[in-house]
Length: 145
Picture (cartoon, one colour):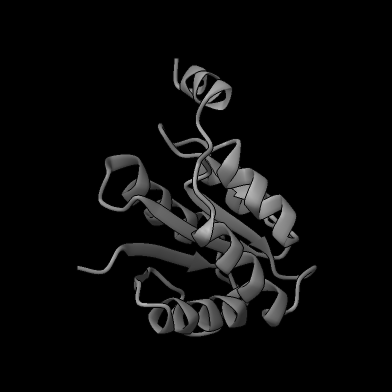
């Protein structure tokens, strides 16, 4: 059974989200697109960050992906949920370190600062990187205490 990955965006991240959903399908994942389903400049990032973060927090998904203009609003919202470690990544190295050292379970992409192709590369690096554990496990465990 394919891993479910919840995905959401605001209006600024709308096109990137759609590209990432297609890429996740191509890679054999089961993306759950929480929206938006159509471009609406009046939408608000918390409306799409919350269902993704809630799914990860509750254990309904092990990972999620969010995108907005800077990534900041999505990360502020997602990181309010227990057990969510949302990391903004603007290049592949940051994505790799977010997984390897921080066991990030929500990737946040800043759509105003990465192209769709860069976003796909960042997503792939984040998906393929595993948590290193060791000294990092102790640190990650302290987040929820």
